[in-house]
Length: 160
Image (cartoon, rainbow, N blue to C red; front, side, top):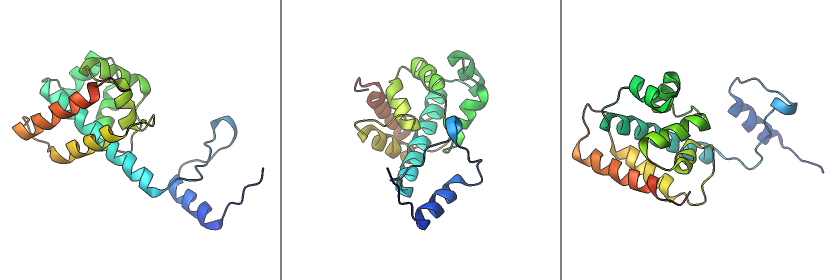
């Protein structure tokens, strides 16, 4: 098999590496030949929605970050990253634990995190709309509560 890799493809891929170490073999990452910047943007949007969901659901349940970390048996630093860093890739175990605590589909949370690619992405679009409608405030306002309730119903549907 022969690959014809263009100079522009190499330049695009090197920009994506953003100073990360490059390796080969078992630890190397295969190049993504058909990747586009739009896919990265959608993933970031979905992870923002995941972070907003975790933050608002935690607040609705009157849990501090420390209390949620203890209840879900996950690392506090990872929860902080999920809530505040759209580029952060959470561990599958953490998403499973959060799904159990929040009573939502682990498959849907995995889809929002970018760890899996869902067959039906409408829930991702709904989650992004939800994140856009919510603001960081001390208590959930009625609109945020309605948005959160709607997202919970989408995330609990058994379409994983």
